[in-house]
Image (cartoon, rainbow over the protein chains, first blue to last red):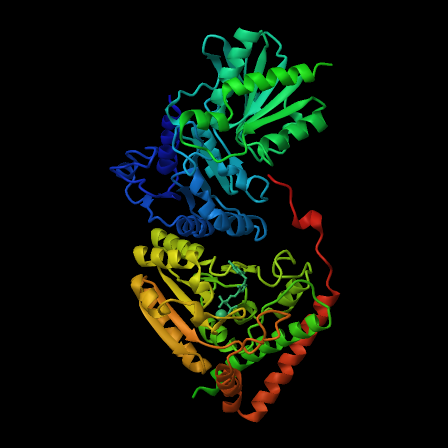
Length: 328
Length: 307
Ligand SMILES: Cc1ncc(C[n+]2csc(CCOP(=O)(O)OP(=O)(O)O)c2C)c(N)n1
Ligand SMILES: [Mg+2]
């Protein structure tokens, strides 16, 4: 099944099994079914459970918070991840505070599609989940094509803690493989079994020299880099893909490479990858490098966009240089 | 005039004022940390409005200036004094402080107007679940110019939720005279979102009680939102350090003359007033003394690790 079908099935199951689940968002009802069609068909199947919202992102993000305070389980969709700037106050100063400071269990999921590589330009391509990382009282969860997005969504809805659920626009159309063969070369397995598992993509039986750590849609570029390193440079790599970005235990990831490259799609400065690399280097004692977008807005034109965002070829080049520097 | 009811209301109003004055004195002596926003002059609204609430069914949201709302609703002086002192015996064990209170179905927060979207959400949930009760939300004139407030009013108008918005228009947002930075009128704005609008000059606590009672019953029955604006005045600084250099002299003079608390006081027998005031002064002094002696919270208990 494709990523989008996992999500749609999970939402359908949640709506069917739990009368307290509601969906809020712009254009989510029929005949449109959401800007990315995640909720296609559902408003007909579940009349009254998908609530079409006006273009008032902070207003209906807060509306959902009130519903959660009243014991419902809202799933709030923000059409593009870029628009979370408009809801930061409701999420950071209200949702997170009600949960932690007021000690109220809250079932609240804010779903939003993130990411670039599509030529949509500066305000429709960013990965702004970074704004919520490190905020106590929030959990940032990102599915990927190696972790069942539907299962992650169900876990998030029933967690009892606010979750920012970051989907990826290009991943929607991709097939999900959570165990076994992935393409001709690699195998997928669970590296850390958890409500939000860490998945590993590796060659069967061959120990890797380098471990990639990543999340979300940029996994696609990392997998290509992993292939090219093998074919073109005879460097064996593995990839660990994380789904709980607030995961506080990256220090104990079962990394098999002697060096680690952490890749995120967003800007590397002051970002997730650098924080994870720091923690791995200092607590796991392995040399670690952080890779991500360059310090520019995300332009529309393809060569410019691919200059800014991390690409497979840049990951290969920088990984090889890093391995050379990090040779004992 | 119902003197018994007035005496009861006067006691609450006097409790709020005494509480706020005591807090001011603590700050002046450097005996409290953080900041505080007093509600001196506005007590009649908190008392008149919240006298109607069913705490189990209704939901109430406050603001950064909600000591009065909390006391009108609960009467718990010791818990509020403790909260302001950061003590374990506080409303939420000192985690919140003056601006961040949570008690049952009563929540406040420090972002002006920021509670309104949640308030509409709670009301929408009541409607979806077919539950009784209404949501009462206080806000200030300054908060009326926030985007989230306008979005929330639109949502209430669009979804016809059982909300009562209570605007306490005290004319100032900190040092800004709100009228000078407001386009159009609040009334036309609110009506533009499809909400019925009522304005009342908040001088008489019994009158506020009567008016709010009508609106409250109406919203309980119709399950549709109403917006109520009270003209009022803050007879104290915006916060602990405010020297009030910005006040408009005519407004100041009018409201000094027409302080709703003194109006209620004048209408009561002297003997009743004396009894009430003595009782309340003792109650507040005792609560603050106990709060001073209360223990501080333990981080290990209050700040739990992430699940
Ligand atoms: C979003 C936001 N902006 C600014 C402030 C700082 N601030 C606290 S109270 C206040 C004025 C609020 O005025 P109003 O809404 O009229 O309420 P009042 O203080 O008069 O009760 C300001 C500017 C804040 N707390 N939140
Ligand atoms: Mg004001």
